[in-house]
Length: 277
Image (cartoon, rainbow, N blue to C red; front, side, top):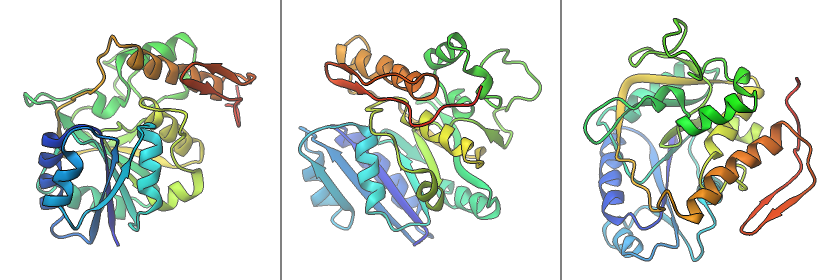
């Protein structure tokens, strides 16, 4: 099988249906499977999936333990040469999947690929080729880790070596809205670190793939529309815990060797390896 499409869903029934319709249409000429991992939705997502998409492989969790763990569940039952992790709030272009697979087939040194993303109003989203939101950019600058991301826009946006909107180029970080990854690379570097519950999992995996000597690419010759919905309010404790907790986990993992730290609802462990300074 060529492609396994994995979507993690929680309470996004209407958006998920739009996403699935676009993905199925874009996969018409590909040997593919779709795997939905539902993270304890309380809306009608599961009922809709069973009624309208009976051929889709469905994993239903009774507890939401995070995007990383759900993604790993999907990868664990996947059969494709390539794994596409795509958000439930994205709409895929008609030729998107064919084009990205063709690129990966030619570029055998590529571990993963991200693409040009447009917002709901059709505007280019700069995190398409940067891979990082502004808070993460600031965080990496503050801890002095920015030098490890030479192909990512972390400082002067006018640097001539940086990726432009329509320029295919190597990048550091794949955006988690659309991550196409070679499964053989996952077999080598491992799956998502499940300590990253909602944020940072893509940054960690992308960085590990780079440490292993693989290349990540930004491919702008196709697109997705990213509606950027979020079930968790930004000023809620859940959001703050998951977002800034991910930064702490990342720093502990790559910069320091710390004893196990326990915070209510969150756990960090000593780094398994360190970046050589």
